[in-house]
Length: 303
Image (cartoon, rainbow, N blue to C red; front, side, top):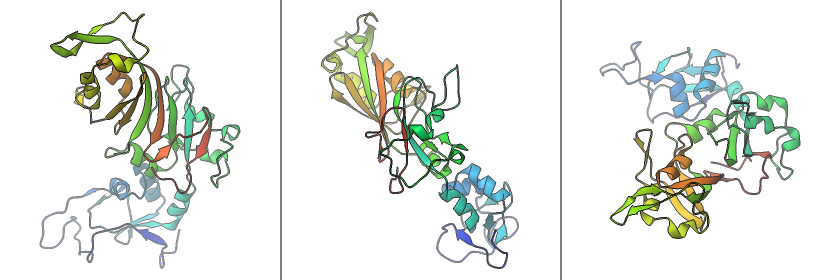
């Protein structure tokens, strides 16, 4: 860590104007108490790191608040000056983000029910030969490498694995607005129950679904419901972009990711998903990345 006399620290952005003199109670003289929040949460909100990283940095003595070494669990206000030591920045610079084309049969997170986690595919021999990112693979890149979002065991496509808490927060944080795009092959299991009740469904025998030219028989009212109007787990879903890619395949663009969301949405309108592939997260495309292979997020790429 830098010497106490001349610490090499990065200052987090703060509102313009001079730093007000603060009392030990967290208020400014002549005013009421300022709203405070935990230091790790504030650092995450500023985009400096994840909460977990913030705690590790505080434990290492790499964070100062108003010129004083921070303490674990410390409360701060929006006007407090947060500084981060260069050692934390250097450590963060070595973290990698990996893009994997997950095959069917692998779970996104930890192993479950005898199925392996997708991270086991991150091996030197599975790196895409067209990956020209300036990284050399080594085992340390697997430490703390975690999925930033889920992709069901029976789905395929783009899965992001990252060591960088900033990336994870951007993709799966509570305030994330990152789009995820999917190609979804469907069959139709329901028809309008009556002309005057187009939103109600009656089942078709499961062994005889409409599997070709589904678009021709799927009611437009149901497509509208997929776009907006459905609820899962007692909560209304955010508006989605849903359009026909071809007569048997829909394109979904979502800004949320409830468990098995697309499959459950489709069930509510009489469709059954028979194939699901994620092709984009934010501005990052799956592209030509082969199934079962991976590449690094390139330095110029941003979600």
